[in-house]
Image (cartoon, rainbow over all chains, first blue to last red; front, side, top):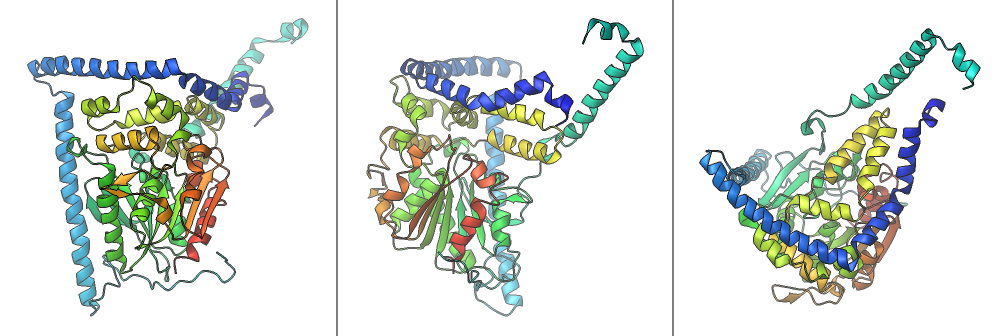
Length: 134
Length: 364
């Protein structure tokens, strides 16, 4: 850090903030752990849920009238994409299995030593360095 | 500056001073801003080569390709927390626990969790332990051709691993290591206060939302240290000239806000059984009618806690070791926080070699 930097008041303030952050955070967390705050949090969460539902229903109707997809439509699409991704995953896993079987056949062995990988696995015989204790 | 010095300032001096200030600001900021990613994909995470081995519901099992000619016999399965993405353990080359373990000759698998779809909100703690984790363990055994396995659980992944090991004392778990694993709900003080307050209603939350959104989880985690993120931004500004710092910071920051949604049923179990009723510590947790007794875990056990962990404080994790029934059990408390313990700049000198040493004499 140059001398000019060390005198930069904004930088000094940032450094003070970083150093004192934990104390401020602890104080805030303590405040949030207060019984009244905890109750308020719970109430706020439930009210937010209620408002969210009301707003979503109204908005969904409004968006449908405008022929625009709602969040629910987007989530439907997300679910369909996730289904497709899962199917692709299954295919990927299956292909890996097939490749492995072919590799084993090519190597003339039917053991499971190569696992599911198409490449031959290293020997599982490694030992720890002699100077290691448990 | 004295009045006479001020009087001597010419317009050239002022111009030169302004130019110097501007040049300094530009030279300081341009190198720092250059590595800022334009899109998420510019931040390359998860660089260690891997293959998907198994996929079921929200479980994704990957095998990391060995790089050594000879590997340890027992495969290692890393179990991630259901609320966190796995790339924190494989952030970048040289900043990756996975890469380190692979280079030390371990056969590494990782169980990562995908975001649940809306029709997966029914997935419960029982499903996560007895179906998904269990399915992954079977897949690792099949894939490796071995009969036993080492489990390494991170945070709530440690809880899941402990539950599995307790329910299957006769195998196939050979060793069990956990990092920053909460076991005592009373130790999660802020959450306990919020969730035992009369106005909090997890059933209503699950009914309305189905899955608990990632943002909700993220906000809850940030409440534990509300100003930490702002402080981290300040640190970023103070180190904007340091490219390595900026990149590492951005990767961490991306992960920190990239929380996974949690299936509603799983969230309900975590809130009621773990936080409110604290069943783990009271030895009262049952899954599919079978009691989860950690005293039945007799395999070698290691727990690593972080000294400055504000997410899983000592009060939440220190009861784990006494509850485990194994003779060969150890707890290590290391410098660092919940995340820096496993992925911070000093992890390569602290946690990683310790874990490697512990595993290497047991994975044979």
